[in-house]
Length: 163
Image 1 (cartoon, rainbow, N blue to C red):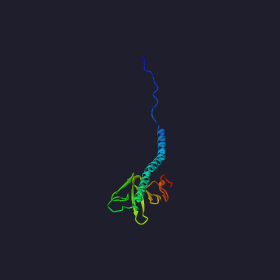
Image 2: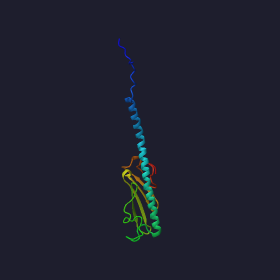
Image 3: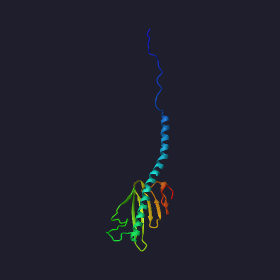
């Protein structure tokens, strides 16, 4: 008679995930991503909008300082100092983050200016303005995210859908 020292053992339990467990995990990740990504994008845009509003506020303050010293918003004598903050020959490209700031000066007895910040890249479609009377406006159009698309005539839109 043949005897064996080997004893029969139960095979080890299968290790890994079943297809249903994997599909449930993928569904949960997809749902979380669908909720988180738009909120994250709004958060990033809010951070970039601050660049525009800070830049416009700083430029507006510089324009007012220049006006106090020279009683006009444009350069007093073309081509010679002191230069207006809106003198494009001295300051051709003013950028703050993803925004480019342009300036228009109206000469005359009272004088006026309007500063415009125009977004590009991830802030394309965003336009913010301020004038000498500190009137702030914002216009957000496509290709900006739909929840940001709004026109505010008396203040800046710094949060999605809120003037």
